[in-house]
Structures are given as structure tokens and as C-alpha cells.
Amino acid sequence: MAIQRGGFSTRIGFILAAAGSAVGLGNIWKFPFEVGEGGGAAFVVMYLAFCFILCFPVMVAEISIGRKTKRNAVGAFTALGHKKWSIIGYLGLTSGVLILSFYNVVAAWAFGYFIEMVTGHFDIGQRFGEFTSDYLTVGLYSLLFMGTTAFVVSRGVSKGIERAARILMPTLFVLIVGLIIYALTLPNAMAGLKFYLVPEFSEITGNVVYSALGQAFFSLSLGMGALITYGSYLSRDSNIVKSAAQITLMDVGVAVLAGFMIFPFVFSQGIEPNGGPGLIFVTLPGVFESLGSWAGVIIGSFFFLLLSFAALTSTISLLEVPTAYVVDEHGIKRSKATWLVAIVIFLVGIPSLLSNGASEALGQFITLPGAGTLDFMSFVGLIANDTFLPLGGFMIAVFVAYVWRKENFDAELAEGADNLKGSWLQSYVNFAVSYVCPVLLGLIFIVTVLDNFLGIRIMTMLLG
Ligand code: PHE
Image (cartoon, rainbow, N blue to C red; front, side, top):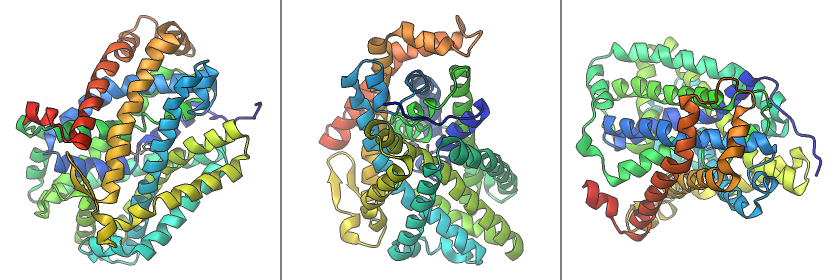
């Protein structure tokens, strides 16, 4: 099938788009509340270790598969001559659809908060529950959000995705740094920093391990072929290992910064850090209010607007994965494929939309032996983020090391990378893809399934 594929016009364009995919609600909304629920700094340590030791090599592997084959997450494996392994791509499509289905709802909250801030409704923080259960309003915002995402994706890679990422990413960064400086001047900020930075290793439980791993994969957009797809638009003279290192550092950097911003705010307001998905939505409006009405409206609306944009560069990549599949493998035109996929995912997201208070019945009906009772959104998160993504990462590592084989992987990495050969980074990536990732990801996957889905609590027995 000879279909004209778009491409990123520059390497920096690729980096920004991939970093745009990585940096999103995962860093600013999810990371802080996961840290809060996972006991603070102990979670941060696990998360950082997973990002660098396990995720970075998987990222290199994904980008290489994409660039080598110039195909989508499913077609890439077939193009390498291993059709059976395209099961990895199908798993990735499933994860992507599930993730976008709830992600879009949270993005709608962020956008809704932007509107609330513009109109000076700082009390929205206290009305978080009421706001999220107003499902007609949130539903409308999420329709708008999905529509915007589909609009950008339908315009193709370099025009839509790259252009948006170029402007928005740096702006967000500056705003966060400004808010950190303000946060550190507040009373009790130090207690927040202590919670965030001084690990209590007794806090590491089985749940902390899976959620830190799931968070690492989720935040880096790994394990579902998003970076296979983006890699497929990358030119042959770009250095893959270096790009992956930059993307990882940027993503981890923004998450770590988000923590520096949030925990001083949380502690200065005397809020419990383990409040779950509402954490930033409950905390931040009060902070903006404390800046005074003018500054509060301006900075508050700017913040939630940029958060919405950060979410947008991620929803774009989430939608791009199934869209590229439909375009490449079924020969459907990009614009039609995009809208088709977007509608399906919006519909899949309706239970997540309703799961936040609007419907008790829908919200609380799933009980798992290990994980307890979950609302629908957390249930989808447990399946897609914490289980499927690491499983995808495991299979990608095994595929690259033992099926595609190291010689071919090395040859792909060498293109566009002059002094990579023999470097420690190259050696580590090879070693990790062959041994560290398969062994650790495989083990954690088995234990996750036993623990959460079958109630056999091995990790809990080991760690307490
Ligand atoms: N990494 C994105 C975030 O942190 C979410 C995402 C996951 C995007 C998987 C693409 C693929 O918000």
C-alpha cells in the first residue's frame, strides 16, 4: 500500500511533539495525586528508577521500530516480517482507546476549570465533586475537547501536531516555574517539600510498585505504540538514543517540577495529600484566589488553559495511534479515519464521564479481589495504565532483543548517531532491552495480575 506519509520537518519538531505527547495530565494532574496516595517521596524514588532503568530503553526500542518501518503500531511488526507480533500493536490500540476514553474526560475538567477561572469562580475548588458530576456540562466540554483533538490530527503530522507543540510546551514550563517560586514562599511549604522529598521506605507496598510503574509508562506515553507511530515520521538522520534521552528528561523534569509546585500548596492549605484525582482541582483554585482577584483570574485562567493545551498534545498522540492504523492498514483517508475513531472513543468514554459522582450505580460497581472497589475511571486506569502498558513494554523489549534481533536494532540506532557505537548509553540500552526489561517487567506483570485481579497478594506479603 503506497500511501504518502507525512513527516516531522525537523528533529526538534519531533522532540517537541513526542515530549508534548509525554507531558500532559499525567505529569501535572496524575503524578502529584499518585505521589500523595503512594506515601510521598518513596513513590517518587520508585517512579524515577522505573523511568530511567526500564522505560528509557523501551522508548528507544519503540522509536527504532517506528523509524525503521515507517508504519503504524500494528503494521510495523508485519513490515519487519513478524506478523504474529502485531498482537503488540493491537494491545497498544486497545490501551490507547481506553486511555483516551477517560483522559478526554479529565481534559474536559481542566478546560472547564479554565472557563471557571476566567469568570472568577475561585470557589470551584470546593465544588469539585459537584462540578464533575454535572455530566451534561462536562460532557459538552469533553465533546469539544475530542473535536479539537480530531481537528488537529485530521490535518496531519507536521502542520497540526508539530506546530501546536512548538509554542505551547515552553510556555507551560515558564508558568510552572513561576508558580513554584510563589509556592515556596507560603507558610508550611517546607512540610510539603519534606513529604515530597524525604522517603519513608516503609511506605513502599505492592500497590506503590504497580502504580509507580504504571505511572512511568503512562507519563512517558510508552507501551502502546505511540512512539512507534511518532517514530515512523522521524527522519533517518536523527539520533534516536539522544532524542529518547531528551524526551525522558523533559517529561520526568515536568513531573518533578509539578510536585514542587503542588505539595507546598497542598500543605499550606492544610489539605490531605492523599485525596486522589481531585488533588490539583481542589487545591489550585484557592491558590489563585490568594493572589488577589485580578492576578488570580489572569494566572488561574492561564494555568488551566495551558494544562488543557498540555492535555491536547497528549490526546493528539493518543488519537494518532489508532488513526495511523486505520489509515495505513485499511487505506481510509486521514480525515475520515480520524473522525471515525474519535467518535468511537468518545462513546467508550461515557461510563468514565458518568463515573464521577453523577451515577453512584455506575461509579462504584466494580470490585476486584486485590484492588477493592473502584469507580469506572480508576478501573480503566488499572487495566490500561498499570497492566497493559507495562505488558506492552515487556513484549516490545522481548521482540526487539530476541525476534527482530540485536544486530538489526543496533544498525537502526547507529543511523543518525555518529559516536553512539561503544558508548555506555548504547551498551545499557542493549543490556536493558535483553535482560532487565524482560525480567523485571515480566515479573511485575505476573504479580500485578495475581494481586489485583485474582487476590493473590504476593507483593503485599513481601513488602507488607
Ligand atoms: N503521557 C501522557 C500524559 O502524561 C498520556 C499518554 C499516555 C499519552 C499514553 C499517549 C500515550 O499525560
